Structure formats: C-alpha cells, structure tokens
Length: 434
Image (cartoon, rainbow, N blue to C red; front, side):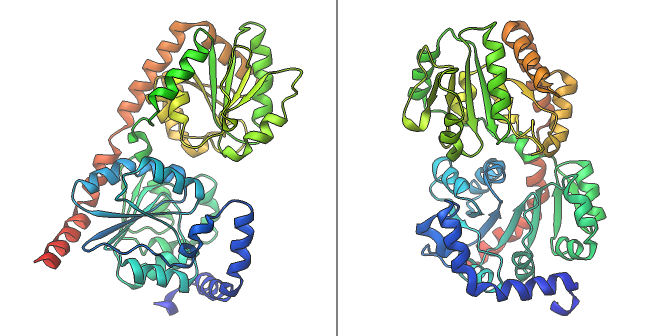
C-alpha cells in the first residue's frame, strides 16, 4: 500500500517519523502556552494509563470543542446500543468540556501526534472496532494506519469549506488517497457532498449537519437565578465566542447604544477564556465599569461590561440575554454556530463573515431568524432595533426556531447510514461474548 501512495504522503510519513526525537521540544513549548495538559502528555505519544474495555469499541475523533459537541447526541444513541465509546480530540478546552458535560463512561483521550510510531501505539492499545471522524480533521498517518489495519472508517458530519476546497484541489492526489480510505463520507450539505466527491471520495451521502441537532447547553440553576437577580430590569446583550479584533467594535457599539439604553449591560464571552484578563485591561476604567467572571465578580448595577471568561457557561448566558451577537463573524474567522443560542430563545445578530456555517446563516437570514450586520454602524443599528422592539425580537426567535426545526434530522439520517457498520460491530461483539 505504501508504494501506491502519492509522493506527498510518502514524504509526510518520512518527515513525521524523523521529527519524533524533537517531540519533547514541541510538547514543552505547547505546555508553556497552556495548549497541553501536563498530566496527560503521554497520550500525545500514543500511550495511556486507561485500560481498553472488553468488547466492541467505537472510536470517535473530533478536532476540538465544536466537533466534540456535535457528536454528543450521536454518542448518546450509541451508548443506548450498549456500545463503549472512545472519544479523541486535540485541545485542552475540548477535554474540559468532555469532563464536564459527557457521561463518565465515555473514554476521552488526546489524539496522538501524527507520527507513525505514536499512531501505532494508540491503535495497538485501543484496537477500535469502528472509527468515526468528525468534519474534516484528516491526519494522514492516523487514516493510513487505520486503513492498513482494515479498520472501518466513516467521515461523519463532513464539511469542506470554501477555503479548504481550492487548497485540496491543488493536492488532488493527496486528498484522494486519504478520502479513498473511508468506507463512506456523510456530508453536511449538498455542496459539501459535491466537494468531497470532486476530491475523490468514492461514496458520499448528504445527511445534514449534526450541529443542528445538538441539545441546548445546560446551566446551573442557582447561578442563573443569581445572575437574573443581579441584572433584573436591565437590557442585556451577549457577545458569544468573540475573537481578537471584535471586542473593540463591540465596546464602541455598547458606548453608542448606552446613550439610548442607559442601563445596558454587555456580556462578552471570549472564544478562548484565557483572553478575559487582556480584554478587561484594554477597557479604559474611566469610560466603562468592567467586571470579570474568572475573578468571581458578579455584574452590579454599575457594571457596563461583564467579561464571562469561564469554561462551559454559554448556556447560562444564552438564558440570561434576549439578544446574542455571534462572534467570529466581524473578522474573517468564519463565524460560530448559532444553533444553541437559537434553541435558548435568543435573537441572533452576526457579522458578514459566516462562511463556516453559510447554509445555516443563509436560511436564518432569509427567514428573518437572524440579522446580518455588514459594518460596525449596521451592528449598532441592528442591536438597537432589537433592544427597542420586543415584537421584533419575538418574531426573530419564532422564525429562527422554525428554521432550525426544518433543518434538523441529521442525527437520524446519520444513524441510518451507520446501521450496516453498527450491525457488524454488534455481531462481532455477540460472537466474542458467545
């Protein structure tokens, strides 16, 4: 099989083997940046202190928080079939979310660095029965080594962005060799399906976006009650999953809106909570009063801006505010998933850069379930209209709820497509127990 690989992949295998001696340097650098868990760095080398459970083991891999959460409902359905789940991801944030929001019998591991040696250790230890890769986190050695072991592999919730597609087109032989190792590709949309097929995926089915079927995120009732008490009667805007470059725009929008809504509270939830202190320091104390949640501060009557820089509390703030600005959209990041906010009854406002979720936002915008702000001035206008008009907010929420309901169903379609593979796993499990 190795000889049939394109030169790019053979070169990649050689280089990824050669850099293994330098792995400690990479790990130390990532540890200093807080990108690795010091207690679990061995998992990055394919080693684990956890014992593989008896019987069939379904391995699900997602890059980070969004992919892991997209798989939550699917994981619950697989658990109902008495299947054990190994869930891998690559970020400290995603590991924290799994620990907080997933059942304790879900085995989480950091995905190994993509070296043949580390990947072999990982596969030798866990010996998965079926592999489900979420979206487009395609590590060559992980895929090629799994295929060599005849491990059935399915790409679920497959997405090929408008940025990635032309890049892969220039490496058509490489991506075709990787996609060809998958038994089937389950794509989010028809355009994703067409892109995967054009890149060499031999078997593509459009099943929809699992992120549309995610349950609303939880919230601690006591914490919610306290926040509602502290903010009662105030107009509130939540800016969710913001990125560098957006906070300044949002703060200026707050200043302008506060002229008309003097008790306005803006809650900023940075995509990366560690940025909270830096955001707070960037706000001149003479102009706005700021409170920071990671300092265990609560918004008082004089707080203008509340920095919610904690992990896993978006569900709390979506329930707090009737209006949510979805971050990652005022800059060319591509937007963040609005579905959780919609399911918790928020009116959605977003910037122009939402290409990561273009189908969802197109449908929401067209139905009046979300409002697009092309410029900072338009952002102020859209937020101001929603703050002033309760009926407009309610109409927006109703339209968005209807759109999300119509676009749902990806979970059932995904499970239907997975039935032959799950049946085979269950047959093997029954034979082993006989």
